[in-house]
Image 1: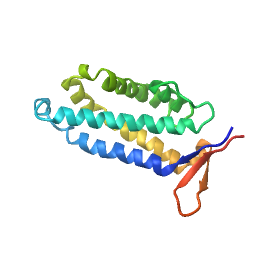
Image 2: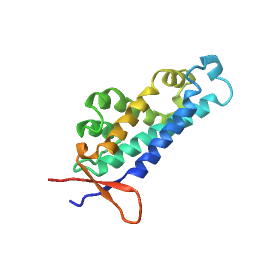
Image 3: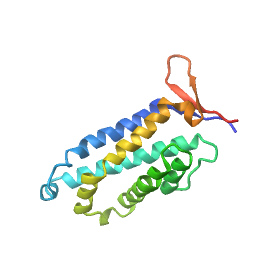
Length: 167
């Protein structure tokens, strides 16, 4: 099987998107529910949370596509396989990522059922999960050999890529 490189810059760009969205969501962490209900707060929060979740699973699918047998069949499978391949801890995969995948699916397919109260609750209680995920991914990028990737520099000053080492 041909080894596919992991483009660090592409992953970093998605991590940056998560951080940008977290910046928007953080403004709501101290906002009382009654205030959150006013104006465009819910719409901004919904959009930012959806973009963050999309980036999480795009990164996960991308990394898994570089691993043998890593092709997932859906978002919850991305979460499971990230845990199985120790990209994230198995506990984080089952306790956090699978739930994030389920909520991503609700935001996309059942958006009309999302309530202001539940969005507010998630923002108040679960944003730290995005930091946890980002830290796992940063570890993959910083310690690529631990995950079976070898660094390979492209010529011409282009970005560093990681190639999965197969035995």
